[in-house]
Structure formats: C-alpha cells, structure tokens
Length: 137
Image 1 (tube, rainbow, N blue to C red):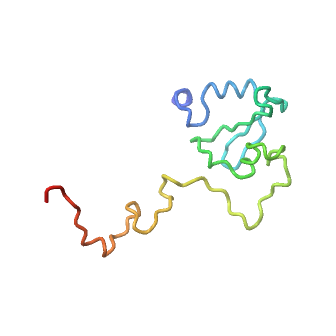
Image 2: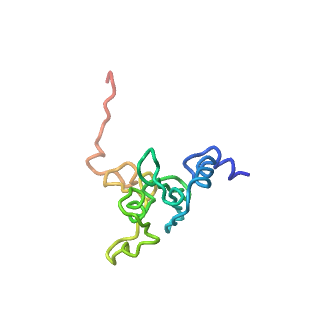
Image 3: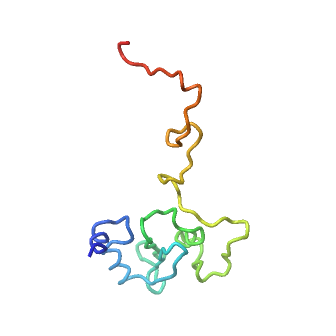
C-alpha cells in the first residue's frame, strides 16, 4: 500500500500511475541497464505524427536522475542510433573506460575542494586571525 501511494503522489521516484498506464498502452520494452532502469519506445517502432520520430523514454529504478543513464543508452534515447545497446554488438565498452557513475553532487561522494566548509578540514592559519565586520563597531 505504501508503494502505491509513493508512486501515485511522487513523480521523481520511479514512475507515476499515468506513466505506467501510458507505457502499458503505448510502449514496448526495449531493454534495461545495469542500474535497473527500463527503456521503452512506441509499439512497433511507429513514428509519432506530432514529433516525426519514434518516442523513447526511461522508467528509472529509484530517483529520476538523468545522469543515471549509461552512455550507450543515452545515445539511444537521443536518437543517435537505431539499435539499443542491448541489441547492438557495436557498443562494447573499451578496456580503458571506467564504469558509469551517476552525478555525485549533493551526496557524501561529491567533490569538496581544499578550504570548503563542507570538507571538514581544520581551518588554515590565514583564517585564524579573521575578525568579521560588525556594523557600528
């Protein structure tokens, strides 16, 4: 019951009821990536008359964050290739490529440069003698 309310009232966590209905009615499953995101396109690969190309969409596994889409699927979503990475043998990651990682901004893994308040380092010696300005002093 809790999952139903989460899906009904939140658009950023997976898919809403309307998205699930639209996917059930008009979409066909194309594949999934290593993060559990599921990719769809219009049934039969029909072109959308309003757009002039095949509609493609993703249902995220968890929070909807575009940086969680791996490069191969991102190219497919943007109509750069016709075959998805699950069917295309051409897209094979090279040995020098690192595994895809989502954007860490706002998480504990985010980059914090030296001197950042969020880094937790002790203050530098130059900052020890700092006196903030106060009006009327």
